[in-house]
Image (tube, rainbow, N blue to C red):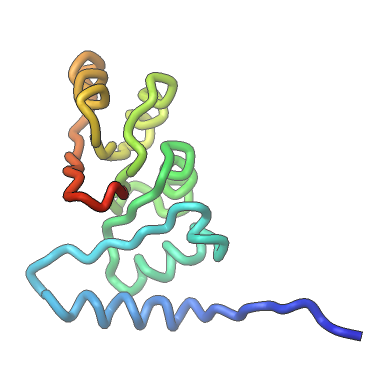
Length: 130
């Protein structure tokens, strides 16, 4: 009889690794990407452990993920949405104080027309990735 493979992830290890990266450049902001439910590890628990370690900036892929993370963490941290705005998401973005990342002219135009909250700009430097 064989057992299924499993991985054990220690939140203390994730926090330790974040602190080690953060110490490398004290003047910079060290953020955490917790999209896709923290890559299957649980965005809420992972983000709470990182917040306790000092992380105050997070990235998610979609507005729905940002809203769930805001509910888990409260009003304190900055949460950026990488995949840009969709018209259906504007109310969710506003209501959860999320910062959208604009990566196309269409995103910029939609954001301008919506007269919404602050944003961040993504410039593709050749890797074609967010």
